View 1 (cartoon, helix red, strand yellow):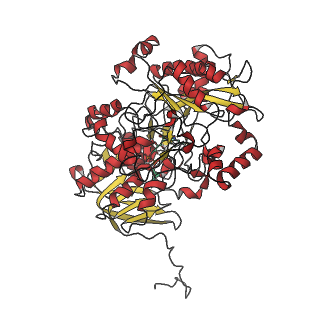
View 2: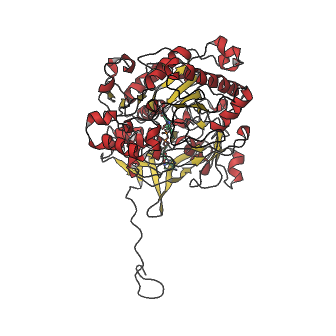
View 3: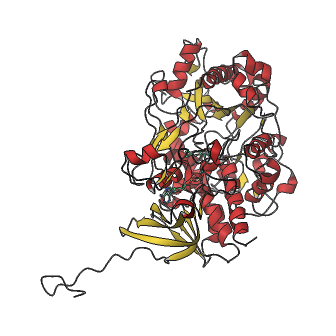
Amino acid sequence: VPGKSKGGSQQEPPPPKGQSFKKEYDFIIVGGGTAGLVLADRLTESGKFEVVVLEYGGLPTDVESYSTAGGNQYLGSSQIDYGFSTVPQPQMGGRIMPYHRGRCLGGSSAINGLYYGRGTSTIYDKWESLGNPGWSWEDVHPLFIKASFSLTSTTFVGNPAHSTDPRFETHDANEYSNGPLQVGYQGFIPKSNVPFIKACNESVHTPILHDLNSGDNRGVKQGTMTFDANFMRSSSYDSYYMRAKDRPNLTTLIRAPVLNVNFEGEGEDLTAVGITFLDESSGLVSNITAKREVILSAGAFHSPALMMVSGIGPQAELESVGITPILVNENIGQHMNDHNAFSVIARVKPEASTSDIGNDLAVLQNEQKEFYFEGFTERWHSRWSAPSGCTNCFQELPDEELRSFGAQEIIDLNITNQAHIEYLYESIAYPGGANKFFTPLPNESYISMTASNLAATSRGNVTIGSRSILDYPTINPAYFTTDVDRKMAIHSFKYLRALFKNPNLSVFLDGPDAEVAPGSAVQSDDDILDWVYTNVLPNWHASGTNQMIPKDKGGVVDPRLRVYGVKNLRICDVSIIPFLPDVNIVGPVYMIGEKGSELIREDHGDL
Ligand SMILES: Cc1cc2nc3c(=O)[nH]c(=O)nc-3n(C[C@H](O)[C@H](O)[C@H](O)COP(=O)(O)OP(=O)(O)OC[C@H]3O[C@@H](n4cnc5c(N)ncnc54)[C@H](O)[C@@H]3O)c2cc1C
């Protein structure tokens, strides 16, 4: 009898309410991250489709500091970060590295380092030549503009502090727009920041440019950031989602991990028909059906992992955790392409650095007071308005230089005009914390010069360790497993030291032995590599784990982002990137979101 327990008259408890949703939508978007919220906005724009987006995490505002550059330091392993770790890396002495990923609406765009770039045109031409018509620079450049400071959808925010300095102009005025994604500059600029730009020009032989966002990414300038006029983060949540969230045809479920993609049919008729998800707060597990398509936008690790737990992936890996494959594709989770970064750290005079806001709580409190409570001028002078670094230099190595240290493989890739090494300025000891070479001291100030190989050839992978998506994926970046990557590391390390020797920066050094890490004892190539292995961190650009290239060449999705061998299933996120751009990649991911939206709308008669 409903309402009665077996034994007598006691009322049964009501089921938990859970979040409300319909049983069926046109599109199901799995993951409300960077690309996922571009899709949520664009697919609901015309009003023709009903869309649900399911996000594993909660709101970015659950950790309010996400929205400030100063607050970035508190996001690692907070509730809006998955706080993954890599598996031990035998080639690096068995090191396990942290791997951050955003877990909230906005995804990694809500926790990232804020740098905005687009990379070099020839990389996208390479995407096309790999078998992806429609993805050349000529095709995607308009979508970068649409996604960022363009005539149609993004506002470029000039900082009055910089308006008189040509180094801080970034782009053709034609690209100004009024759209959602804000791109601008940091407020406070440390005294050693502009000298870094000059040192790169002189010692890394890189031109100072006014624009790095028009398809030529070889140069140095004050970096553009996903930042608004108040020096607050512009993530996909703050930009695209804010304008779409109240549309009646968009449903958003948060704390709602998708556990499985559901399929019907087999062989050529295998079709994605919906998903099963967990509503975390109620504990209820429910199904939603897709009238048109399921779109995975769960990022470099979870998009392949979700396919695997749903029965699509490498045969042996699925079987090892007791899953009977419904479709085998050995490439899912493979070919992971990433950038990493390591630093040389020097002790400097206090005015060159922002170490003091980490060392002295009274200084930190004062900077926060200026930022939040004292008006706009104080806000842009506050160190809370600046990340520890967002001024990056993109160096192209000439062929003869690449050849001189045995990097012929990079020449053989035959990509012209690309940047090979990124040099990043940090106004603190980066990465923070002690290691076997160095412990930062609270009464000292530091800056760091960091190098990132943009032409890395090592490839890693991601897989599942269990049948459940709720167990963290197994991440193996496999950095430095190719000889040429090790050579590039040693070569770029030497440039880091050259930067500190440049007079623009050496004036700030505190004493003759100012290089505190790794220190002057490290000179041989072997010792340099040992330092690199100790100090390196991911630069958080994992990609390629569902790469977009023809199936017989190792692909997972076709140029319209459709998963090979399954109907009504697409992937639209960083995992489809077939060859990493020579830049930090949130800009390219926004472009992928725009491109994916266009392809889907075209295929469903909405464009
Ligand atoms: C710490 C950090 C710093 C970075 N710094 C920069 C930078 O300065 N500049 C730059 O250009 N790039 C930077 N990046 C890289 C860039 O931000 C990412 O490459 C990009 O945001 C990835 O976008 P995405 O849409 O592929 O994935 P994400 O934005 O990570 O979105 C994936 C979403 O899917 C959700 N999800 C996962 N599994 C499920 C599931 N089963 N069910 C429901 N939802 C799920 C996740 O919670 C997440 O919200 C950084 C990244 C990190 C992590």
